Every structure is written in structure tokens, then in C-alpha cells.
Length: 87
Image 1 (cartoon, rainbow, N blue to C red):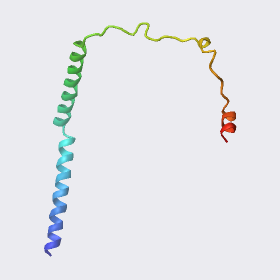
Image 2: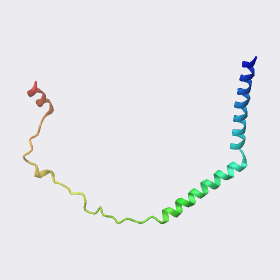
Image 3: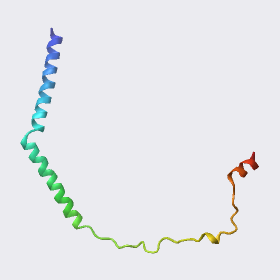
Image 4: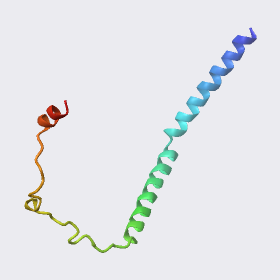
């Protein structure tokens, strides 16, 4: 008998918790607060982004292009011939 009462109390507590959580989550006050919070975060992002410094472009002429004709002495290897020589 005591065991059944204990389970009944547990079930009632769980249902009360779920009901109160859902009631708060779907309340108008919570929706207003969440909207205000999102709006203030967006405003803070805009203010912060306006105060960011602009960096100078220092990437001009960084890449050096190498011509393929300079490496004429490079030996051309054939994959299958390398395997035959080692086998």
C-alpha cells in the first residue's frame, strides 16, 4: 500500500512539473522576454560591428608563380615501371 502511494506521489510531481514548465514556456510573458532578449542581442551586434576597425589589405603580390620550363632535368617516372623494377 505504501509503495503505491509513493508511486502516485512521484507521478503527480512529474505531471505538475511538466504542466508548470509548459505553462511558463508558452506564456505571453516568456514570449515577450525572449523577443526582447533577441532584439537586444541584435542591437549589441550592430553596435559592436560598427566599432570594428578595418584592416589594411596586405596580400598584394604574395603568390609567386613558377614556370614549369625551369625544371627540364626532372626525370619522368612511370608508376608501373617502378613497381616492375622493385619486384
